[in-house]
Image (tube, rainbow, N blue to C red; front, side, top):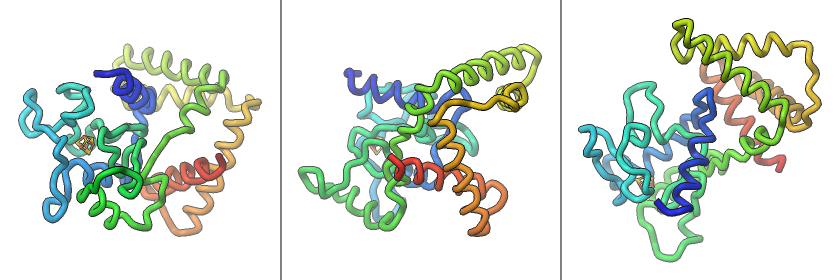
Length: 230
Ligand code: SF4
């Protein structure tokens, strides 16, 4: 693994955060298309390799991450796979990845890339190239870092009491939120994020989204707004 590969690996890991953040479903679908093709006209990526560790699993043979469960590109139902990381680089800079470069900006022709670009024409550019810069904004806020640390500690405590991972994190988030409910944050990044999220929620509700779709749409709109505000 060279230095840039290590950097990309660490960025992907950090983007997951302690709460296991996932990329939105549309971006994941585009990544799946980039790696696995569509089973018809778009062939599988030449960089794709079957895992020798587990039958039926696939890995990227070009990113230098090796062959282990945490880098499998496909998984069962709700399993967190490599393609779920909010930030993820691709050695071929394919659509859906954070270092995507359009086919017209690269040297030689890449037929697969062009085919995918035709299919996703009109999709929000941030969905096609999720750079996840908001993570670095959050990292700079000491108050957010403090709360993140408290959630982490609380979740670890909950797990020792026998809670499963998801339940432990959920309960920890609730407890820390309760603790700070009267606390006014001085962090301008957080205030801006809160305002953008509120705007995104209103827009998604006005369009008619509800349930899980509502949360997905809020996340998509929020990322789009955040990206535009930079
Ligand atoms: S090179 Fe990119 S598109 Fe191909 S398998 Fe690796 S991550 Fe997927």
